Amino acid sequence: MVTPEIQKTVLVTGANRGVGLQFATQYAAVGWRVIAGCRSPDQAQDLQTLASADSSIAVETLDVTNSNHITALAEKYKDTAIDILINNAGMYGDLSRQAWGSLDHALFQDIMDVNVFGPIKMCEAFAPHVVNGQGKKIVSITSFLGSIGSVSKTPSTPFYAASKAALNMAMRGIGQRLKDQGVSVVVFMPGLVETRMLRQTFGLALDEAEKAKNFDYRDLPTITASESVSSLIPLIESLTVETSGRFLNYDGNEIPW
Image (cartoon, rainbow, N blue to C red; front, side, top):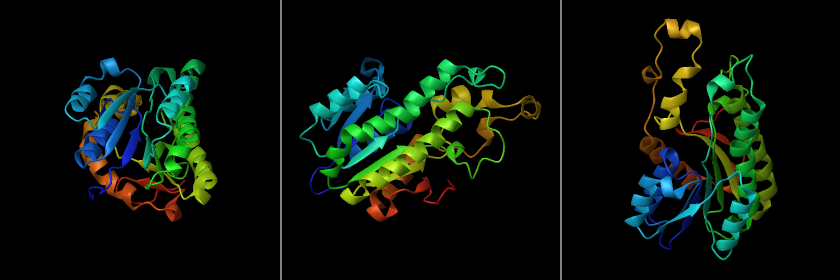
């Protein structure tokens, strides 16, 4: 990745850990200004440590389900051109409350609020900032479970899968809306990233037959958050308005809608 001659700005949601923290880390390392949003900055020790060592990182309170947070942040940075908006904040949810026979409406609403409403509202609020930027890119982190063309069996996480499919569709529509203003809107699958969310939830999604085979998510080809973001950043850099509306894997391959 080429260090920008003029400092560019990236806004990252869910920047307190995992992929979001890596986006903040790696963009700051090459000279970008980073607006790092997270729901509870006082609990984001790793992000605060990073920001204390690098004045180009601004940590902001941002709950993407809270419209007041989003509009207040957009107003605070109303005179700031944002080159890349990265909708990274996401929620997997308690698997037992997504199990067939125990579907929990409240959890469904929470997941949809975080994974779908939040990114849509962020795009609405920050579209003017992105239009004024040099990069003109909006990236949303999705999942292969949001690919209707790829899911070959009923997922054990129906709420999460539905939310990512909805996110993909929403971003495709926003891409059409902003295309005439030169903005590229793309959804990326970051890979099976070794994160706290994966450790807490993935193994619990197994059915009894899989458990009987001693299946372990650690047997799958996981990658680190650092590896994922190192692959994603050059791909994001290469996006143009002509590539808007694509659904891409972290290795650059297209994923079926």
